[in-house]
Length: 208
Image 1 (cartoon, helix red, strand yellow):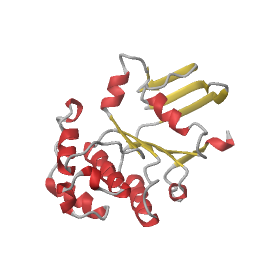
Image 2: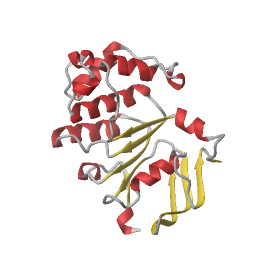
Image 3: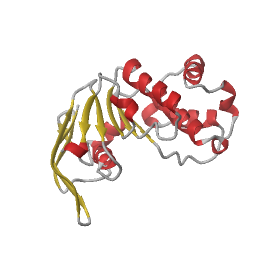
Image 4: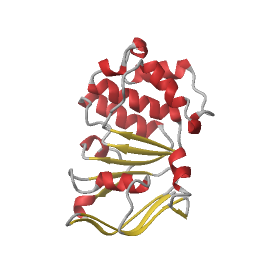
């Protein structure tokens, strides 16, 4: 589904990738593991078309990613990051706003599904009536994760999504994405909880 072919990428005088290759098949789950600053987030940005490699190609469903094809990828992708810079407003309104985007208008969700996910991620339903800015970092992260699940996209890009969670919740998040979701996933993290899953193909950037 997604391929990075012979990627060369540098910033200033730092070479991040020199001939890097990655091919992710449909419904495959890949963990890109390594310390901070090694280039994990740059891989996500290249897949989304926000960063262009110095050399090499990024492909989606066999087609080279460019200004004409990148929107097809983005419409079919849920990107979850550790940065929740969402402005104020009720949580329920935030969910409605995301579902109202053009790419998401055909998605049908039920209140029962929302409640089910809130319960799984240890959140009470009354959180829907709270202002997003009044939530803790962990609560914001879990709401973002829940929204991504509701989007039901074919490709999930998960960028350090367990960073603000305690160990119990980290395990629940990892279990849900790896064991419950039959979706293509590219995960970047230095969280050891992901390493415990044998369903993940692990790419350790520190060993390349």
